[in-house]
Length: 208
Image (cartoon, rainbow, N blue to C red):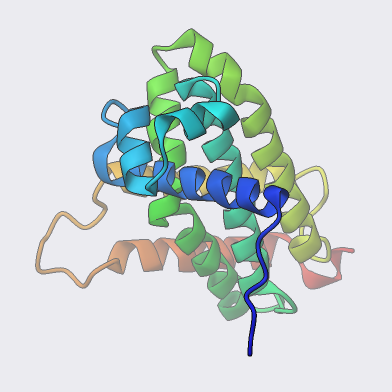
């Protein structure tokens, strides 16, 4: 007879927190910042509000924790998709940029856009998000350094990463192919190719 091991208190606590964070991601993605109330998150997670407030004393604390949760998960996913890949040719660089594009434009990453837009008019949220933003930047720079250290000059890495990520973020708010009959993503794919060509020509492989 097989017996099911009972979860420890720490495991139950971790499971509840993860369920709440994942539910917050879904609410922010599907409903937006204003409609992501603690009641909506609890309903989505199947968790009582009492349980939520035991782990997150305020709505803001929940949102900030969710931002950090998404950041770590997205960077880990990007690392997994690019582990061991080469960045020697234009095709290889363009492929890596495509993986980064998928991470930045993923539905989960909409969490960050919702919170950053809200923070523009909410000084308390803006301040509360600062540690999570700094952590995300550090994680992204570390991942980029591991991937690009043989290609890009260390002093240029933050600037190049900023150009690429801001380009991808801008895609969310603007359509680069206004013609509805155009091939999906045609202009974006060409832009990625041009960026890859510039990186390869500006930073020869023997840089390091």
